[in-house]
Length: 300
Image (cartoon, rainbow, N blue to C red; front, top):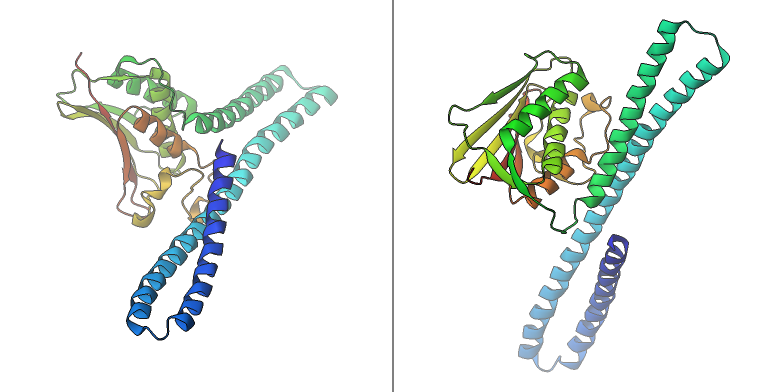
């Protein structure tokens, strides 16, 4: 479906370009034919020229967007290839070592642990790609009241364990009036969204992991989750772009951070699907980032 719609869009703009050329030719011919009627010529010339310029602007913007999309697609392919190839190569190396060498029991168990970590990394990459493919699905799922505060608390505990963090490095907070934090939604999708933001916060914190996840009720109709880190920060011009598919912040200091560019895109798709919104705040590079999820609240 996406490929055919993209082909239709490209075909439309190719036809538009041809029509613009024909319009320019017609304008010149009209100049000759209607030369004796200067008033009509001026009127039609202004209109046709305005249409021509507008069409060229639209066509150029489409081409620029396609170029950017292709660049992001290539970046995504490279990232996914790396995310798949690296753990596979690692697992293969450990298996070959176990096959051809005698290792003691302790080292054997360490190899098993490392291979399990690599398979978890592989599974995480595959799940992200699959969730990104499902993000545009408009099919209505079964939704039930979910205690969002409890769900966030569970996600924080899982993130602490998976990233081997101390409680003070990843804190959970809840406002004093944080009672009745129910939302209507799919608990698995919401858990995926929260976990993605937490993983991103850890990933971009560098060596100084200091993250807080706070649930608030700003008014009677909404519940919010604010995840704040003290990491690399985001330039103001890129705060909205980070939620686009395949987009990754262009920062040389982040070249060592691996990823597919799908995490925050998935977060935005899930939050929008639940009738909410998500946005990011940052005071600039090196000054940390806060990602805020806002969801409609339902009565307990």
